[in-house]
Length: 541
Image (cartoon, rainbow, N blue to C red; front, side, top):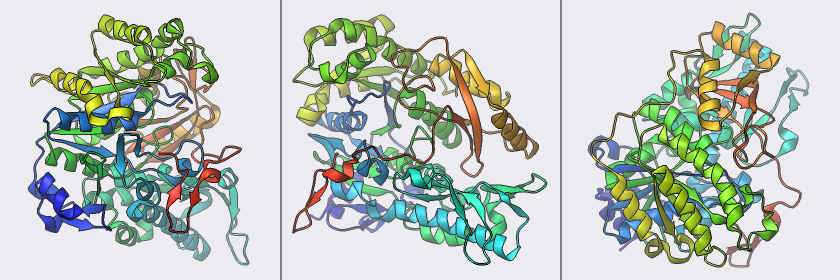
């Protein structure tokens, strides 16, 4: 049986809805959602604050779905697509690891089915049309107040700030590049319900301001349908599978530290329509991806999770407890206990959304000790949340059956209505303080003069009745990457704002966070090899 036939049968889909992209991957038409209503329970996987030791959130998500299958449940995955920036930079890809991986990993990590190139092209077509209108003088947009940037799916610090229009008869102006996952086209793409909704969102993108500080919208350039033409195939979710045959919809890929960090609404709905349990994840830790999943994605879509899983590793807890990466193999239960403050902070944050919580201890067999694991279980018991050890890397579904059963048992039919952390009726600063105080543990927020000026501009244009997307470091609960564990006595500095009106949120830039990452001194690209038959090695999963 072909991949397409097998997956169509497993998901209960007419084979005509599944379009093959080679032998081991496909796209599924969004028309499926017109015929298959939601039937599944949604499980959101998040994590504690990431460390260089690695937490394996995607690996646990895949392992949990395989564990659900192992205990006889019908499960499906809804995951983000990897960006090539991290693939060739520092972090690596995003296809899981060991026995809990999705396949074909190399294809997923590199221009998967053309989605990121399409989003990049759509973004840059709009940029080109804007500069063309400036050249011909057919727009009221001020050349010094253009906010729309070009993008590319690569880490490149040299492109953060550039000057364009230096050619003969050009219109010189300062510009810059973001990485593709930070593009508002990506956010619109991931939050859209269908093509009509995507058209509305693109029309509503603010690309800059006039000399009189009036907002200028993308619809004024008349190319929305041209952008939709580029995105017409990309909007259909990609279908692959895990090593144990669990179907996986992999679609969209905004970063959680600079964007909203969730896979597409369409893919999530498709997973819920096709299985009894849909497992999805949000980028980085609970303070970033999960908060945005709940306060942006769920607010806009009406989705809500039935259960929350927070991934922790003994290694990460040791680092939050002050242990150097070189010493993580040495048993140190006291360091684990010190690091539990970070895990406790994320559990407390998750509790605010009134959904059952399970802590998944992602097992490292070679170094984790029973005493260290017991310390984590003691914390969870004291906080009244579930806890299970999962050997997802080594044993796949068989190693995550306890986790799967714990999560299933936590879900009830009488859960309270889902409520977001804050109301859109309160001022912008109060919304940011709700996040900073409630989720980060900060004393409050401080706006720079530049941020105050930008916020006033947004308010004059009626662009602030939106949820907040906090763009901050992933390496700390604070906006200071060096503060590990559970920082106290700090404020979050808002240095600027960016409007994502089409996507439907206001981006608050915290600290020194940038929307175009940089490569490390020795990029991961240096480790990749391709043999004479085109086989790739050295790529981090």
